Length: 265
Image (cartoon, rainbow, N blue to C red; front, side):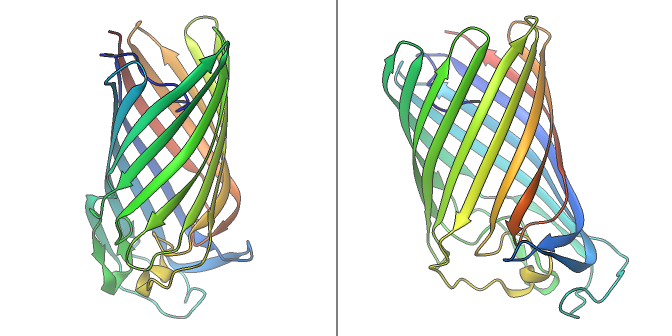
């Protein structure tokens, strides 16, 4: 969803989705690939809900349930020569709660600001390098603008994440373009950038061997999403994405599928 727009009072949007990224290498800070000693799987079941408190104020809850694991087979010594035991971990990722306030709407243009709170709800198994998120609390203010009419829309956002426990500050930006095809199909393209300011010294520990939720994560990535609206309030979505730059993220494509429900006031 383009978050420049707020829900009308009493309206809501809910989504349950599943996504996966599985790989045996990761990007380093120079954009090169580093081989991992074991295949790493990062699977997510995500519950998302936004609700219009007023016509200008929307609240959002995002609840990721993570299933992370490393494969049984150690194919190589990896980039460091440190071969960790295989294993798995499941639990909450970093739950986030947000408020979006609409600033104004002028013709087809809308503007809004958002403040997100990221909760320290993740888990970790240090001995095998597995994490479901970062060990930090955080806040993320952002500015959003969007343009749209009946069959086309675009949005842009820019913001920052400020985190506790000596985690680095992150800057993020997203640009989206969406269109409606023959009443029932939606096509959305998205380009995302996350950049660490490298101003924190939180310890990565053994997570450096898996590329899961380390301190200075960064990437430039794209995704393409296709939705089919089979009822006025129900849609199914499929998406894939990838990147061409990163730091401490898996060098593998991501796939997702989701079901959404829209409730009008």
